[in-house]
Length: 564
Image 1 (tube, one colour):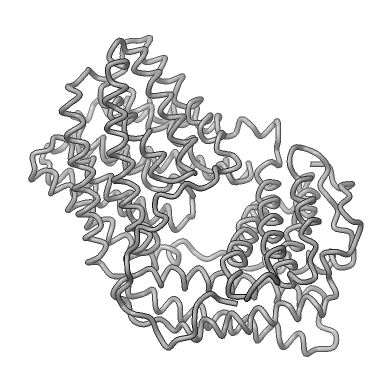
Image 2 (image 1 turned 90 degrees about the vertical axis):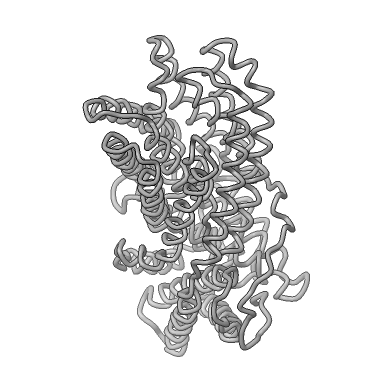
C-alpha cells in the first residue's frame, strides 16, 4: 500500500530538511566504468596538446571528451545513438557560445545567453532522459566558452577539436561492446530481479505501508529494465537474448504483484547468474512465457510520446533554470567576480524534479564545492611544479569525481571543484588564493540565488499531473478488471493489461512523490492516490493468480538457457 495517509490534501508549504542530505549510499555497480571511460577519453587529447605545447586549447577537446560520461546504462545499439546526439548537442552549445563570445564582450549579454542555453539543455536532457550527468556538463562547457575571447575565424578550428575529441569519446563509450555485448541489458535485468526479491523478502514482516518504498523501488527497477530491453532489436541474433531477458523481467513484475507467492532466493539466483557472460537462466513455463511475450509485443506496438509533449511539462523547471542562472550570473558580476559562469553553472546544477530535491542538491553542492576548494589548496603546489603534473592531477581528480559521485553528489563535487580550478590554469598558472576566493563566493552566490529563483517560480502543473496520473491508473485498473471478468480473454490481452496497470501505478507513485516535494502548490488528492494504488495493486495480484503464474514454478534455479 502507499505510504501516504489518506487525506483530502496536503499543506501548500513543505518543510525543507537536512536529514540524510549528506548520507553516503552504496556505490553504483558500474562506478568504475564512467570513471575509466572519462580518463580514457580525456587523457589522449590532453597529453597530445601537452606535447604540442598548446594546452590552452584543452577546453575545446574536453568538450568532446566529456561526452564519454553519458549512456553507460544503455544497450550498445541505443548507446551509439545517444552518444552521437550528446556529441552533437555538446558541439551545438559550444558553437552558440563561441559565436556569441566573438560578437560581444558585454558580460550581461554573455550571462543572459548562458542562462538561456542552460534552460534549453536542462529541458532537452530531462525530456530525453539522457541520464547522468545530464545538463550540467553541457552547461559547464558552453558557459565557460562564453567568457573565452574569440574571433569568428578561430571558431571552425575550435569546433573541429571538439568534434575530433567527441568521436574519440564515442569510440571509448562503445569499446566494451565486442567483449560483453549484452552487459547493460543483463545488469538492468539483474537489478530488477534483486529489487523484486528485496520487496518479496520484506513482505509479510510488517504493515504493507512499511514496504511501500521497497515496492516503488522494485517497480522503478522493472520499468528501467523494460526501457533497456525495448531499446534492443526485435529481430536477428540478439532477439533471442532479449526474449530470454524479457521473461526474467516479467518474473520480477509478477513477484512484485504477488510477493507472498514468491521465492526471493530464486530471483536472487537468477540475478547472480546474469553476472558475467554465462548462459541466461530459463524461467521454465513455456506457455506462460508465450502469453507474457504477447503482452510485451503489445507494448512495442504503442506509439512513443513525441518529444514536444515530453518537453511541455518541463516548462516550470526550464523557467527556473533560465531565471536562476541569469540572476546568479548577474549577482556574481555585481560582486566583481571575474568568472560569473561559475555561479551560473552552480545554479544550473541545482534544479531537480521538485523544490525539495533542489534544496538537497543545493546543500550538497555548497558542501562539496567548499571542501573541493580546500582540496585545491593542497593540490595546487604539486600541480604548479609542471604542466605534466597539472594534467596528471586533473586526470586523477576526473577519475575520483566519477568514482565517488554515485555515493553522494557532494562527495563527487569534492573532486570536480579542484579539477575545474586546475583546468583554468592550462593556459597559465594563477594565484591560488584568488581562485579559491572567487570559486567559494560564486558557489555560495549561485546556490543561494538559484534556490531563491526555484522558490519564486512555482510548478503549479504538478497537481494537475497527479490528477491525470490517478485517472490513468483508474482506467488501467478498469481495463484489467474487465478482462479478469471474461472467462477466456484474448491471448496476451490480460498480460498486456496487467503490464499497463503496473506502468500506470509506477507513473502515479513517481508523479505523486514529485508533486509532494513542491512548495506553494495546491493541495494534492492524496486520498485518491492512496485508493488508486490500493485497488490497482489488488487487481495486479488478481491478474497474477488468474494466469496461474507463480515465480516458484519451472525448473528451479537452473541456468541452462540462451547464450549471450
